Image 1 (cartoon, rainbow, N blue to C red):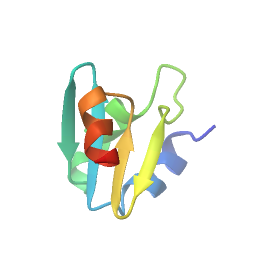
Image 2: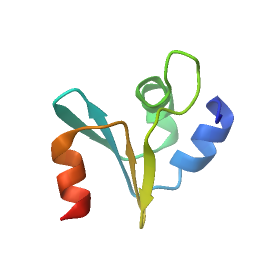
Image 3: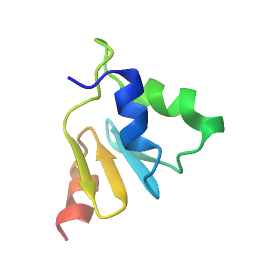
Image 4: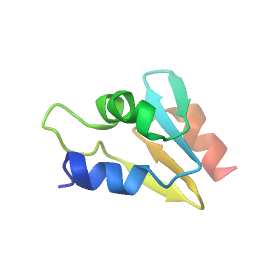
Amino acid sequence: MIKTDGAWNILKDAVSLHVGRGKKTVVYTPDVESKEEILKVSLGRTGNLRAPTLRVGEKIYIGYNDDMYKEILG
């Protein structure tokens, strides 16, 4: 389980963060100013980093969305 501080340590260095939210994918560029919003969408109800979480190169993908995974897998 990865909690708030550990999650931010993983997410802060990504070039982009893609979060699957239902049928939408929301893309963020991690920085200190967006930290609170990013953690809000990246952590689940238990306060742990949502699953699945994938790092592909310098991009991080969180959650599940069919279109997002089609992008990852080509």
